Image (cartoon, rainbow, N blue to C red; front, side, top):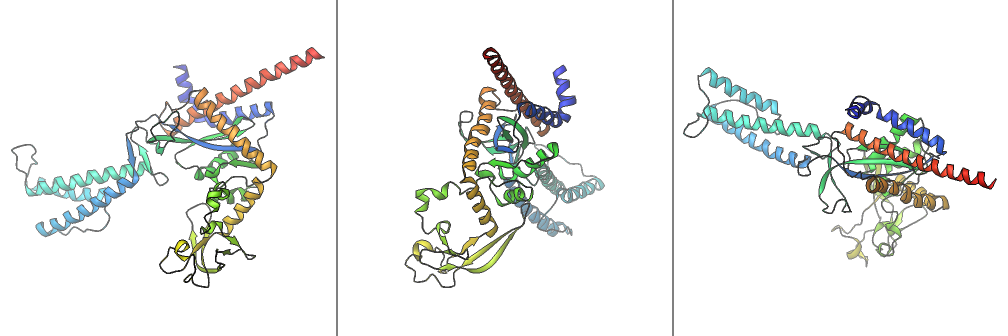
Amino acid sequence: MSFERLLNDYLICDIDEIYFEVTENICHLMDVDKSIQYIDGTKIEANANKYSFVYKTRILNARMKLFSKITHSITEMNMERGFDFSYHYFYCAQEIGYIAQYFMEVMVSNGIEPVYGRGKRKTKIQRWYDLFLEYYMKLDEYEYWLSVIGKDRNSCSKTDLDATMCAAKIDYYCKTGLSRPCYNVQIAVSDGLIVNADLFQRPADAKTFIPFMERYKQYTGEYPTYPMADAGYGNEDNYMYCLTHGMELYMKYAMYAKKNEPKFRKKKYNPYNWKKNEEGYKVCPNGLVFDQNIEDIYDERGEYLKIKQRMTSQESCEGCPYMEECCRSRKHRKIVTRDVVLDEFYAVVDENLSTEFGKELKRQRSIQVEGAFGVIKQDMGFVRFTRRGLKNAKMEFLIVCLGYNLRKYHNYRLRKEKEDRKKSLFN
């Protein structure tokens, strides 16, 4: 009971401050360089039934079918009863509830008692009442689950409403590859210590980077100089965020490793393998320069505005000997997409990672952050949360990370004492 009161009354509210304060002291004692942080994430299964899933897409499709049924019922009811209820494309549960309430008031005013069961014959007005009451209850259920899932998620679990259904990897702990209710845990490791940790409800890692860095800035007052992450974090929003906050670009992108594979380099009709002229325009294998801008595509979905250009050549591709293999469009005109800003970011990342320092960062990332997850999952046996809810699961994971850091410091202290004893014996 003492541990339960400690967890529920104190740690669940102050676990962030406690974690960063203890970790800061350990970093100071171990002389950890926090300017270099190796970042990665993994999915840890939530304490929820794996078959209690709710998907937003299924709800939206079922709701659209229900809308069409409601429209048909309202039209039929107006023609039969002479009512003037309005019908449209979308409905809310409250609107349908008013219709069901109206039928109930009509039944009460006419002294009609609702009957149910075998051998009982319903009146026509009760049939309309039961039908719209069923519509109301179903719409209310759909609206409830859509409010639980929210805008940033596509699914949830009925057992743990904060958990998100994720496609867990097929590894030692998950041999089926099914979607499971999970939390996306993110850690940042510096010199073997977990200096930042947090939980997210997003399955992908790309959109967790900015809030993860803002969390570190909130509790430490600084940003890391060299955030190193894998290709799952390399997009234009994260690169722009690093550039505006004084962080170097060392995160790989999706095509970083694949673009140098011999099998991919042989695909000469892929615009990614085309060469560029002095002006930066792509040149196809037949020598056509794609320098004609058809249109600009503006993307405002992320943190920053992204502009992509659709480019084509001044000459038509008709008559080109490679047209059948290269140009799949029936208009005989190849169109390629260009993002000037993102291409410049990729060039900077390639240059940084090609240096000896960049190669060492790539090597250490796979050692340190993957090793930390290995210790947490394999050695500490933390493969599933025991508490439900985002706050409770976050508290549990931060306590695990604190235990990891304390174990690191304990081993460091023992090594240092052993080295001091050896020095004293030789002296």
